[in-house]
Image (cartoon, rainbow, N blue to C red; front, side, top):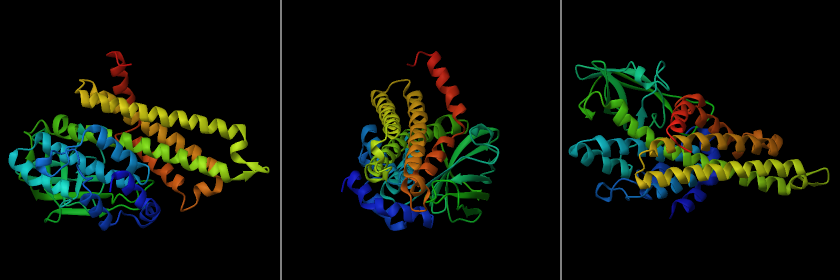
Length: 358
């Protein structure tokens, strides 16, 4: 089954996952068995060697059904990308087959109470081989088997792999948050946990290891948001064609057509930005990272705008507990604040503009 067919096969269940607070374990296994986890990892490590184009289309399809399902692919891919790029031979041989097969579920633990968009300010410490600190909003953290953790060691950023379930690791599941309610989000504590798995030398933990993970994450989030925006437009079109108001279908009202037109522009723009970032990555363009930031920023805004319009066009049905567009609206709001407010990305993009990005 290809990823488009897989996404369609679970579309009807996504609302239940959102209400129950988690993607079921059997669905996670099915995603793994279909080969959709860390699919861009080389075949020799159990991946499929997929190109950015293929990974992007996967995340677009999953994002158009369930943001938590896309988040599973995102986080697993983030950790795998970091291990592939910065792990030693033994670490790659140990962790990559487990990540691609779903033998382990990964969590990316970077955010703290005092370190969100400014990850250089993390207070989690690695001292004498022992890890201490508390991480917040870890996607799939409630069910993760291993965490990629950003910490500080002797004043230098360091990235480490920590297995869950060992003494000193505590997991506090989070529920009722605005969006991504099915993504098994948790706060995770580390109280004197022994660490032996360090990726890259201290000093490279943020700029290199976590930087690699975040870049992969932005790329997959961007495509997921493009899929979300397209799904909201599709549902809005279906609704206005059948909903009668004033004796005529909503689609007959000029104001409604204008809204749909604006939504179409947002969807097309999001896809174009993602496609441009994809091509840049595949060419090895030196500005590929900036293009990915641009795609994530633009696609997240598009998903938020189109989802809001879709909710309004649906009226009361748009805010019902089982409303897909309502769920997408909440999820899109979360995508807008990942890594900080829009202004954080805008500063990076302003620098890109000054370098000649256009």
